[in-house]
Image (cartoon, rainbow, N blue to C red; front, side, top):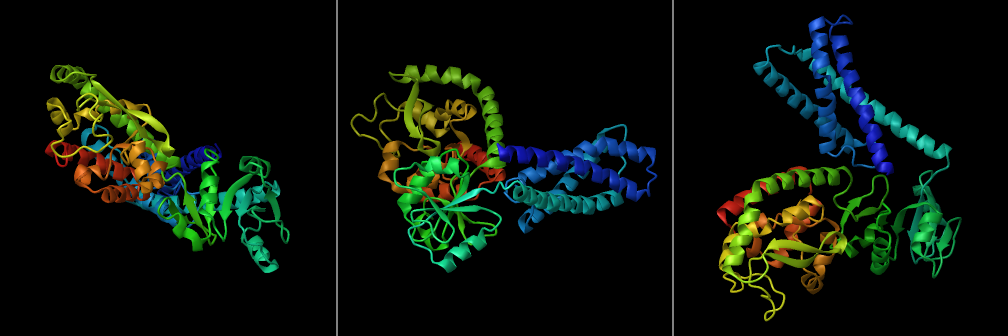
Length: 452
């Protein structure tokens, strides 16, 4: 909730700043005497400039970081400013081509505007960050940081730790007794959730020696609490195959990413899913009527196929497809992936699979939020249990209807190759990657590459 509130406040203020800067640019360009026709142009384009700049900052991830300003955010702000100026300029030119009333353009206004915009946004974020730090100190509302360790600290190590987190966190210990001013709070038999609530813990740090079971237990027992999990760099090999790791800004630790697609990125991805699934459902309505009839004519059994798969965080759910195999096809073979020329597939099923039409009912699952349009394919519990590598970061994102593996060979890939594509997607997610995969999927479906 705090992150949503922070995003809304920053968005409103920076949209207002953008409009103010545009007016100031006109004012400077015309030395305070803005001609009426240019003032009319300002009123016409101010909303376009304000919201396009905000949109590009949203797209480039300016609002995702916990920090208000650093070198990476500065670079994203500058890129957002350039992109929104180019797009706004193109839109204005397009309007001037097809409108009876032209919007006056002043190159000097645009140049002044870009420099002032970046300057004012940087000034605002610098002072806002300083104010937030002062407010935290004055209200004594420092968050708690719980250190999991099994090594007793000496005086020098304790002093070093307290120096790292001075004026940023209140330190607590778990796993060892209190030492040199750092209190131990987690006793045997007491639940971790009670400690988190009592001491307002926001971050859990795992220091040497690190125990993998302890890490997994802490992560799995605190779902939905928006905690940060930090790890001693010496032990990143313990979790590197299961989770994404990123350096912690300002501290010599790595952050364990338990929600690889989160915050604004998750919102944009969800809006993309709703938009695309609605369009595809509307255009596919005739097929929803025709395909069940063809299935009934071709073979006995239900027109729909349901099966348990693992979704976000390993939560089981039922997928829904048009049936493409004979009823009870796995009674003799047991669970197995489809093979080339699989005898279990019906005649109409071969056609449906060739063009992925059997997947159409899953658009409903995308619309209702159980699946995403793009992501790792949802696997059956049986296959996940057989391959422990599928249990890590792959289950920390919502599974998708299509993904990188599907546009790079589908069933022709080995299991290791599929997993590699899934991990690449998770670690390099962007809305642009989703759009690219979506259009490549359409190409793959039309040319039937790897379909079974």
